[in-house]
Image 1 (tube, rainbow, N blue to C red):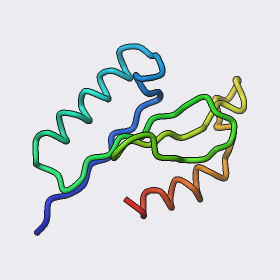
Image 2 (cartoon, rainbow, N blue to C red; image 1 turned 45 degrees about the horizontal axis):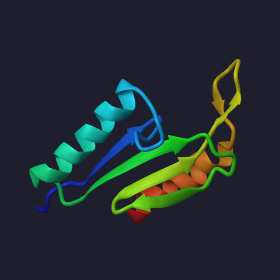
Image 3 (cartoon, rainbow, N blue to C red; image 1 turned 120 degrees about the vertical axis):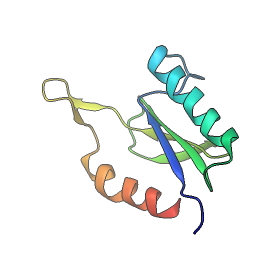
Length: 93
């Protein structure tokens, strides 16, 4: 049986500012990658972009241009990207 993959998801990328949550998630990503326990380790971080697109930032690091569309319900700006783009992204990993 091959080793499983790991995807670490954060609400922001520490290279673009951020606080403890972003840094902790990125450190976890780096630790999992260095551990050798997983076949592949990837990091996905949200940006405040408006397009809903997912794109590569660096090796095994991806950014998702996703913002809050409704401040009251905290729903995503691009609902379609939650189901279509994100699902395609996961399948591609």
